[in-house]
Length: 569
Image (tube, rainbow, N blue to C red; front, side, top):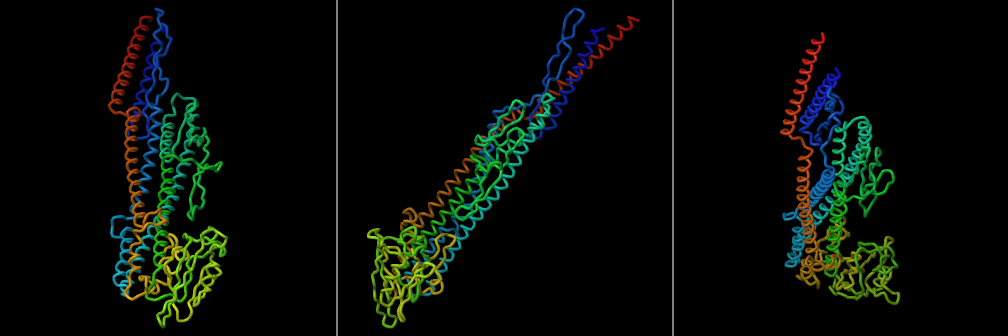
């Protein structure tokens, strides 16, 4: 009767195996809509042994030896890399688009328009320099220009801060995912220690966490023989078995702006970011937003210096009775062109004219003042020596203030003006200028000019109807500036917007290319790991018939065993 024992074992094993196979297909179908699920199949193997009366050993049935997840590790690794590239490119393109939106170019309120209108207002003033309305229009166009400059810079600073916040939140997400992967590593080791492929759901969750982490940062992963996955960032471990090192951010201040740096929590060493959302956020913040802030400040600085150089050499409808420089000197006894002096604008060897006009008679007395900055004989001009030279001029009192400024006062009944400054010292000190400040954040119209538009220096000679200097001021936007790499104010701004447009277009192209690569790899993954309803329907039919066949086989065996027992009786 041993033959029946073996035969019944064959049938029972078949029922159990195909019931398991049907359950696996059911699990696949149930997870059809689960994007993180990897298709599984039951591994079937024949059971050996089981002798017949004739000494033949057909086996003892069929056995499910384990579950197989249909995953290609190489495709998964490439898919994770593509996810990082796509996420990084999309993030960068979004941030560059935000800058373009802030600049709002090709509209009536963009900076190009405001610059053109500002310089154009001086051209109008040249036509009628004695007209108060024309002077008011100069101040109005200057105010509109400054509002645009300051609005754009403020918007960039806000975006810089927002990128810091996004960076901080993204690091929290990455840290949470790393900890999740480490925790899943431990669960998978325990689950698979006593089961054959029984941790498929846990592995799906871990693979999903790896893909999410790869979107945030460029990672590499290596699976170990015990089933854990170690995760690396630029060859440095982030997840080692069941331990995650942790990620954090630390603040520092760079050029007045608070900046967050991504670091490992255990060593505080900086994390090298090469791709993904985090790398794109850092690139957008440090390269593009910070770069645009610096460029906008350079533009404003060049505008201030070039306008003031021309303005300080002209005359208004009235002159100055008192005048205080807008830019303090750090060391009054240091040469004015030295770093120790601390002036925001360059000064060079040259001369300028001081003009003192008798308001009663109209007579003008002119004095030439030398600015010696040739670096020879140790007698280069300092703030203190310049004040002494000016104070020695008849009709003028000059002194330095405690905060390093130059203060000038004409004698009673006299007015003060300047001309022919080849040294740039007037613009560098901020004497008789139109603007003050040294960046897009600090640029402003000088208080004296704002309080009395008659001080706008439209004239070169001081004669009634002379608008020659206003014409020169109107041309400043097209004149090459040493502070702008030899470009004019208008050309420098055009270069800024062109470079931004090129960077935005490149980011868009990169995003589209990365998306195409990702879509291709996703299709490859779906072909292997995705659930196919047609295929699963065939499997259901096959396993159902196998189960039915095993049941029929057991029915036949039961009938035969009954007949045999009846013969024995």
